[in-house]
Image (tube, rainbow, N blue to C red; front, side, top):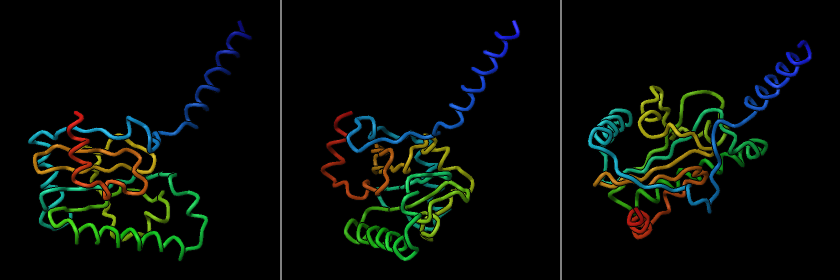
Length: 188
Protein backbone atom coordinates (compact mmCIF):
# COMPACT_ATOMS: atom_id res chain seq x y z
CA UNK A 1 0.00 0.00 0.00
CA UNK A 2 2.81 2.38 0.91
CA UNK A 3 4.61 1.65 -2.37
CA UNK A 4 1.36 2.21 -4.34
CA UNK A 5 0.90 5.57 -2.62
CA UNK A 6 4.48 6.59 -3.52
CA UNK A 7 3.85 5.72 -7.18
CA UNK A 8 0.74 7.89 -7.19
CA UNK A 9 2.64 10.80 -5.63
CA UNK A 10 5.48 10.35 -8.14
CA UNK A 11 3.03 10.26 -11.05
CA UNK A 12 1.26 13.42 -9.85
CA UNK A 13 4.61 15.19 -9.38
CA UNK A 14 5.81 14.28 -12.88
CA UNK A 15 2.47 15.31 -14.38
CA UNK A 16 2.57 18.63 -12.53
CA UNK A 17 6.13 19.37 -13.70
CA UNK A 18 5.31 18.44 -17.29
CA UNK A 19 2.21 20.62 -17.26
CA UNK A 20 3.97 23.63 -15.74
CA UNK A 21 6.80 23.44 -18.29
CA UNK A 22 4.41 23.45 -21.22
CA UNK A 23 3.76 26.63 -23.12
CA UNK A 24 0.48 28.44 -22.64
CA UNK A 25 0.36 29.51 -26.25
CA UNK A 26 0.69 27.70 -29.53
CA UNK A 27 3.02 28.61 -32.37
CA UNK A 28 1.42 28.41 -35.80
CA UNK A 29 3.84 28.00 -38.68
CA UNK A 30 3.45 29.92 -41.92
CA UNK A 31 2.06 26.91 -43.81
CA UNK A 32 -0.34 25.75 -41.07
CA UNK A 33 -3.87 25.72 -42.50
CA UNK A 34 -5.26 26.67 -39.07
CA UNK A 35 -3.06 29.76 -38.82
CA UNK A 36 -5.58 31.93 -40.67
CA UNK A 37 -9.27 32.00 -40.01
CA UNK A 38 -12.08 34.24 -41.17
CA UNK A 39 -15.38 35.28 -39.73
CA UNK A 40 -17.69 38.19 -39.10
CA UNK A 41 -18.03 40.29 -35.97
CA UNK A 42 -21.51 40.70 -34.55
CA UNK A 43 -22.94 44.21 -34.21
CA UNK A 44 -22.28 44.42 -30.48
CA UNK A 45 -18.62 43.36 -30.73
CA UNK A 46 -18.02 45.70 -33.68
CA UNK A 47 -19.57 48.66 -31.85
CA UNK A 48 -17.62 47.91 -28.66
CA UNK A 49 -14.38 47.56 -30.64
CA UNK A 50 -14.84 50.87 -32.46
CA UNK A 51 -15.68 52.66 -29.23
CA UNK A 52 -12.65 51.17 -27.48
CA UNK A 53 -10.29 52.07 -30.32
CA UNK A 54 -11.52 55.67 -30.69
CA UNK A 55 -11.41 56.24 -26.93
CA UNK A 56 -8.03 54.57 -26.37
CA UNK A 57 -6.22 56.01 -29.39
CA UNK A 58 -7.99 59.38 -29.69
CA UNK A 59 -8.24 58.84 -33.42
CA UNK A 60 -10.95 58.70 -36.02
CA UNK A 61 -11.28 55.20 -37.44
CA UNK A 62 -11.01 54.54 -41.15
CA UNK A 63 -13.07 51.94 -43.07
CA UNK A 64 -10.70 49.02 -42.50
CA UNK A 65 -9.06 48.28 -39.15
CA UNK A 66 -5.80 46.36 -38.71
CA UNK A 67 -4.67 45.37 -35.23
CA UNK A 68 -1.51 43.54 -34.17
CA UNK A 69 -1.70 42.20 -30.60
CA UNK A 70 1.26 40.91 -28.59
CA UNK A 71 1.26 39.13 -25.25
CA UNK A 72 3.10 39.41 -21.96
CA UNK A 73 5.51 36.56 -21.14
CA UNK A 74 6.24 36.12 -24.84
CA UNK A 75 9.27 34.17 -26.07
CA UNK A 76 9.06 34.92 -29.79
CA UNK A 77 11.96 37.37 -29.85
CA UNK A 78 14.19 35.87 -27.13
CA UNK A 79 17.12 35.39 -29.55
CA UNK A 80 16.89 39.01 -30.71
CA UNK A 81 17.15 40.17 -27.08
CA UNK A 82 20.74 38.89 -27.06
CA UNK A 83 21.77 41.37 -29.78
CA UNK A 84 23.04 44.90 -29.22
CA UNK A 85 20.50 47.57 -28.33
CA UNK A 86 21.04 49.57 -31.52
CA UNK A 87 20.45 46.47 -33.62
CA UNK A 88 17.12 45.87 -31.84
CA UNK A 89 16.14 49.52 -32.22
CA UNK A 90 16.66 49.12 -35.97
CA UNK A 91 13.83 46.56 -35.97
CA UNK A 92 11.64 48.95 -33.99
CA UNK A 93 12.34 51.85 -36.40
CA UNK A 94 11.72 49.72 -39.50
CA UNK A 95 8.40 48.49 -38.14
CA UNK A 96 7.25 52.07 -37.45
CA UNK A 97 8.33 53.11 -40.96
CA UNK A 98 6.49 50.15 -42.46
CA UNK A 99 3.27 51.09 -40.67
CA UNK A 100 3.62 54.69 -41.87
CA UNK A 101 4.14 53.48 -45.43
CA UNK A 102 0.99 51.32 -45.24
CA UNK A 103 -0.99 54.28 -43.90
CA UNK A 104 0.32 56.53 -46.70
CA UNK A 105 -0.56 54.05 -49.45
CA UNK A 106 -3.84 52.72 -48.05
CA UNK A 107 -5.80 55.84 -47.14
CA UNK A 108 -8.86 53.99 -45.77
CA UNK A 109 -6.97 51.85 -43.24
CA UNK A 110 -6.39 52.36 -39.51
CA UNK A 111 -3.42 50.43 -38.11
CA UNK A 112 -2.85 49.76 -34.42
CA UNK A 113 -0.25 47.86 -32.41
CA UNK A 114 -1.43 46.74 -28.98
CA UNK A 115 0.02 44.57 -26.28
CA UNK A 116 -1.16 42.91 -23.14
CA UNK A 117 -0.15 44.68 -19.93
CA UNK A 118 2.87 43.35 -18.06
CA UNK A 119 6.63 43.76 -17.91
CA UNK A 120 7.84 40.39 -19.18
CA UNK A 121 8.35 41.45 -22.79
CA UNK A 122 11.04 41.13 -25.40
CA UNK A 123 12.97 44.35 -26.03
CA UNK A 124 11.54 44.78 -29.54
CA UNK A 125 8.08 45.13 -27.96
CA UNK A 126 9.12 46.89 -24.77
CA UNK A 127 11.05 49.61 -26.58
CA UNK A 128 8.45 50.37 -29.26
CA UNK A 129 6.66 53.44 -27.92
CA UNK A 130 4.00 53.17 -30.64
CA UNK A 131 2.60 49.97 -29.10
CA UNK A 132 -0.46 50.77 -27.00
CA UNK A 133 -0.89 48.89 -23.73
CA UNK A 134 -4.32 47.27 -23.44
CA UNK A 135 -4.36 48.14 -19.73
CA UNK A 136 -7.98 47.12 -19.16
CA UNK A 137 -7.51 43.96 -21.26
CA UNK A 138 -10.74 44.89 -22.99
CA UNK A 139 -9.26 44.29 -26.45
CA UNK A 140 -7.73 41.02 -25.22
CA UNK A 141 -11.13 39.84 -23.99
CA UNK A 142 -12.94 41.08 -27.08
CA UNK A 143 -10.72 39.58 -29.82
CA UNK A 144 -7.40 38.20 -28.62
CA UNK A 145 -8.06 35.65 -25.84
CA UNK A 146 -6.39 32.87 -27.82
CA UNK A 147 -2.72 33.35 -27.00
CA UNK A 148 -0.39 32.42 -29.80
CA UNK A 149 3.36 32.62 -29.72
CA UNK A 150 4.51 35.75 -31.61
CA UNK A 151 1.15 37.51 -31.24
CA UNK A 152 -1.94 37.66 -33.41
CA UNK A 153 -3.31 40.08 -35.98
CA UNK A 154 -6.71 40.88 -37.38
CA UNK A 155 -7.93 42.89 -40.32
CA UNK A 156 -11.56 43.97 -40.05
CA UNK A 157 -13.46 45.09 -43.13
CA UNK A 158 -16.21 47.78 -43.11
CA UNK A 159 -18.87 45.03 -43.39
CA UNK A 160 -17.51 43.45 -40.14
CA UNK A 161 -15.93 40.46 -41.90
CA UNK A 162 -12.42 39.73 -40.70
CA UNK A 163 -9.25 37.80 -41.40
CA UNK A 164 -7.38 36.66 -38.28
CA UNK A 165 -3.70 35.62 -38.42
CA UNK A 166 -2.31 33.57 -35.55
CA UNK A 167 1.40 33.78 -34.69
CA UNK A 168 1.91 36.85 -36.86
CA UNK A 169 5.48 37.57 -35.77
CA UNK A 170 6.34 39.88 -38.66
CA UNK A 171 2.98 41.68 -38.96
CA UNK A 172 2.22 39.95 -42.25
CA UNK A 173 -1.32 41.26 -41.96
CA UNK A 174 0.08 44.60 -43.19
CA UNK A 175 1.16 42.98 -46.47
CA UNK A 176 -2.19 41.42 -47.38
CA UNK A 177 -3.52 42.97 -50.57
CA UNK A 178 -7.18 43.62 -51.17
CA UNK A 179 -7.20 40.72 -53.62
CA UNK A 180 -5.64 38.35 -51.06
CA UNK A 181 -8.11 39.45 -48.40
CA UNK A 182 -11.07 38.89 -50.72
CA UNK A 183 -9.73 35.45 -51.68
CA UNK A 184 -9.43 34.50 -48.00
CA UNK A 185 -12.90 35.83 -47.20
CA UNK A 186 -14.44 33.97 -50.14
CA UNK A 187 -13.15 30.62 -48.80
CA UNK A 188 -15.63 30.74 -45.93
